[in-house]
Image 1 (cartoon, rainbow, N blue to C red):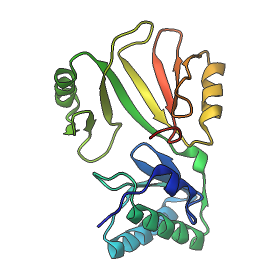
Image 2 (cartoon, rainbow, N blue to C red):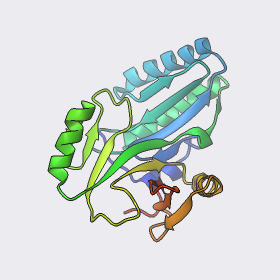
Image 3 (cartoon, rainbow, N blue to C red):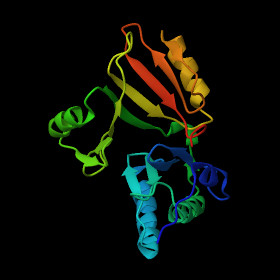
Image 4 (tube, rainbow, N blue to C red):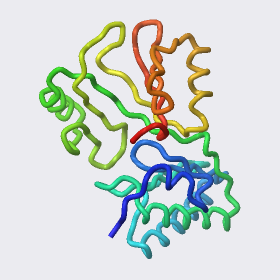
Length: 214
C-alpha cells in the first residue's frame, strides 16, 4: 500500500536529483541519443516497475525518454520515490544524461460561474473523464488535463487560461522569457506557487511550481 509523501519530501530526497516535482507527480527527462537506446532504457524501466508492481508513465521519443511517477488518488507516494530512485539507477548504468530543465506539465484552467455545467460541456467536447468534481483527464493520460474553479470573471483576463507547471528552479527564467516575448506580469501575490502573466490580447498563463503550497 502506497503512503503519500509531500512534494517537499520527494524534492529533497536522496537519489532523485534529476527529477522535478510538477503537477500530477514528478518527471525526469533523459537524453538517449537514439531510438534503440531509448527502447532499451524503457525495457529496463518496465522490468523494474513490474518487479515493484508500480508502473510509471513513459514517453519514448527518437532521442529522449520522459518518465513520470505518480500514484492515482494519492499524488506522490513512497512507492513513487522508490521507483524514481530505481529509474535513476538504470539511467546511470546506461550512462544517460538527464535534463531537468526540459520537463513541464501543462493543463487547461477554466474560471466558471457554473462549474458542473461547464465541466460536462468540456467532458463531452474533449472525450475526457471526470476525476473528482474539479478535474477532467484524457482516459489514457495523453494530452493536457483540464481543471475547473468557481471564480468571478474579472477583465482583462479571459475565462480560460493555461497553467504551466515548471521545475521550481526554472520558474524565474520562464517568467523572464515571457516578459521578453511581450507579456507582462498580471499578479505575483501567490508566488512562488504561481505567477500570472498576460499577453497583449488578454490571454493568461500561470507559471506554477510546487513551492508555496499547502
